[in-house]
Structures are given as structure tokens and as C-alpha cells.
Image (cartoon, rainbow, N blue to C red):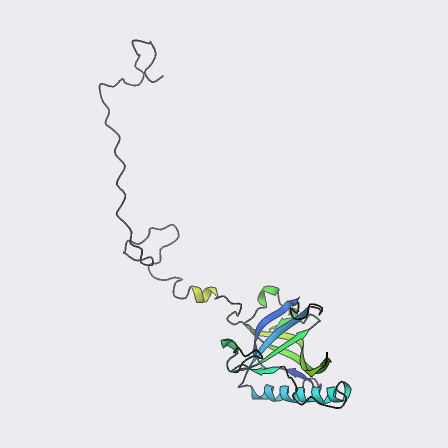
Length: 240
């Protein structure tokens, strides 16, 4: 329970994945649905207190929906939005390695959430500071639904407070990972400097023999006409 709302939870520090907090994302499975803001929370299983709060809030949402949406009958198998990151998805594929040891919840909202930093909760972050892989605390709210004959519990997204940076989960390595051990390495040639002569210093490439020097210009021939001399046949300079 958060702010005395039984269905609402403030998480501890979680890692964010599939971040769509700057712009809403369309639902490819339902082209008629309005685009929504969303994020997937990776909640460490060591945070037992938050897991307990989530379970209690899901139950509160189910009790409310049973009387208001489900005609007093709870689904025998009630779909819930929390999943085991050490297990598999509904389609049978395993969750990604970043989900190991975590509970996985996807929260969404039609309204744009505020994303702030814990050092300044009154100022929203710039888009470039919001990405998959960062750590944050998030407010979420559970609710019952009854759509197209399907009944279950969904998770709404509130606001996000970034706590610290993390390794991006956008499918690419960071510059720090790409260049670990390279920057400021001893013997690294400076831009424009000479390449080391050590064979194989560049990924197995061995420099070939030096190119032959250009031939020297021929020595002056004293029998050739000198610059400025006059051709006795034409009366014109040889080099005119």
C-alpha cells in the first residue's frame, strides 16, 4: 500500500527495461489501441518487502474487480502482471539474462509519466538521460480488467524517480565496455603519430618492405643547352 491506496505500490530500487517513457509506443497486437507509455520493471527477488506489497495490492485489485467487473466471480486462473524472470514467457521462451534473479512486471499508461532524478524531484530529466538499463523507483497501480471476455489484473504506470545509471539494455555495448583497457594504454600511438614497427601490432598485420626510394634527378650535362641560350637555327631561346 502506498499513500493509503491499497492497490498502489512504490517500489524499491529496480532496473528498467523496454523503456518507453519519452514517447508512447503503439501496440502491434492491437492496431486500434491508442499508443501508451510503458516500462518493464526488474525487481530483485531479494526485495521481499516490495514483493509482499505487490501481492497484497494485486489481491486488493482482484477483490475490487470481483464486485465491480466480474459479477462476483473470480476467474479460476487469474492472469497477473508479475512474472518470474528465472522462468519462461507465455510463449515458452526464456527471459533475457538481465531478468535472472528478478520479478518482472510491465506497467503502462496513456498519460505521460514524470521522470525525475532523486537529487531533484522537481525537475524532469532530459530524454537522453532516460534509457533501458538505468535504475529507479517507480509508482505502480494494479487494477482489474474485463476485456473481450478476458478477465485479469493489469498494472498501471505512475511516475519514475531515477536513482542511478546502469549498463544500457538497448542491444549495444557502451563505450566503456568497447574500449576497456584501450584508453590511455601504454604505447598507444597518438593521432597523427607514427605506427609502431613491432610486427603484428595491429591485429596480425605485418608491415611489408619499405617502398624503394624515388630515383635521383639526373646530374646536369654540360653539353646540354643552358637556360637562356639561343638556338642558332631559329634565333629563339631553347627554353622559350
